[in-house]
Amino acid sequence: MIVNSDIIYKGNIHCHSTNSDGQLSPEKVCEFYKNLNYDFISLTDHFKSEYNFTISDTSNFSDDKFTTITGAELHAGKNSNGDEWHILSVGIPKDFTSPTEDESGPEIATRALKAGAFVAIAHPEWSGLNLNDALSMPLGIHAIEAFNGVCKTFGRENGSYLIDQVMASGRMIGAIATDDAHYYEKDANAGWVMVQAASNSHDDILDALKSGNYYGSTGPEIIRSEIVDEYFHVETSNVDYIGLVGRGARFEKISGENLKEAKFPLAKFHNSWARLILRTNDGKQAWGHPFKIYL
Image (cartoon, rainbow, N blue to C red; front, side):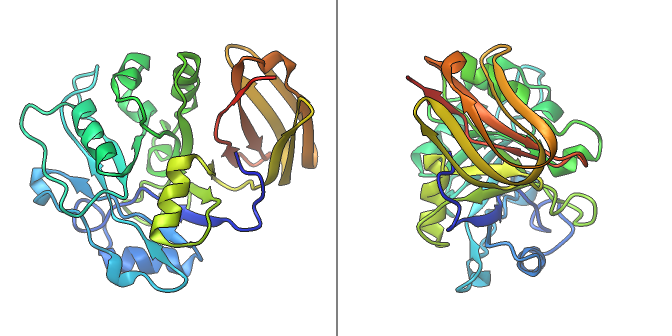
């Protein structure tokens, strides 16, 4: 939950280069996001045998204003649909070992967690994942993609349904937005994470991600949010809808034009959880990190 966004950094943590199936070289990917004034990225090429299990090294493209974090999209085993898993791993070590033939998705995710990575389920709607799939992942997995830019091009970009189901099961899980850029024309600069961190360094960004100090967005901004006297207070950029959703049909909302703040009572979310949603009339959204409520 963002408390104060005076120090916040914008990043994309899912994209691909010519080291797997992307159309730009790693250097050009970094240049692309630098030119858009992103603070950091993680280049997450597919970690597969057909790409020689390459973990792209972008460290040479970091500077005092732009940070790169080693990443990969991991694949192992089969999900409930019989398709391979797609697991986002940000901060994965460069010497991470390739999967064995019989390694499962949950097993490779466990290895990534133990190696110190921020681990997330990629594009659940595109993969047709269900709650059993999500709960097969190890305890401690960090997030699910609420939005995936490349999947929007064919209408299956959402992940909120699975985030809510996992939260209702009693597990904590975060909401991220990503590009998953391959082509860098229609699928880039579509979704990102805003991270509240001590600095725009590799370690501070990674620590903040793993601590849940971020939100996902395709446009709207969370300026401040906090709980005071059994109310949730939030300040935002100009939006047309501010809402809290929770277990089942629990919600609080306001809608109108050019909204910039809201104050919601939390009584109906007591002993449960809630997450913030922002929307604009042109379809832009933001997804706050879910939080538990004990009044």
